[in-house]
Amino acid sequence: MTVRKNWNTIAQDFLVGKTIKQARYLFKDEMDNCFGEDEWGASKVPLIIEFTDGSYIFPMSDDEGNDGGALGTSDEKEPTFPVIGREDL
Image 1: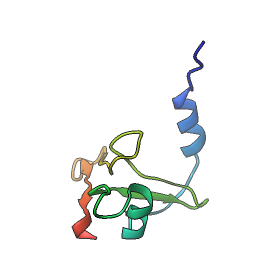
Image 2: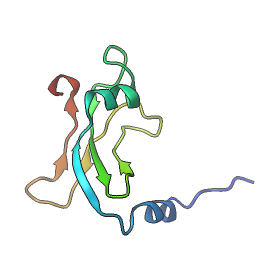
Image 3: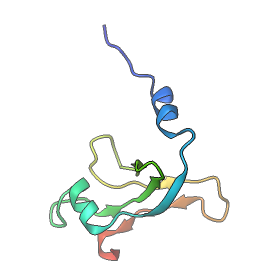
């Protein structure tokens, strides 16, 4: 029998009640650590959201961490926080 995780509960436990300290795009060294070196690594730099407790989140293109991902928003002026290219770092 396969036990399925309740991802809604896991996400709520991790996120609810946290305070955002900073929002920024990953730095080059963080990209290298998360996705590999420039030559072989991901090309899409995602936004990272850091919380006051030291934890953070950032979007990836898939659950294997193959590349950065964009974030959709509820803001009509900025409906998406896009990924940027490594060359923009």
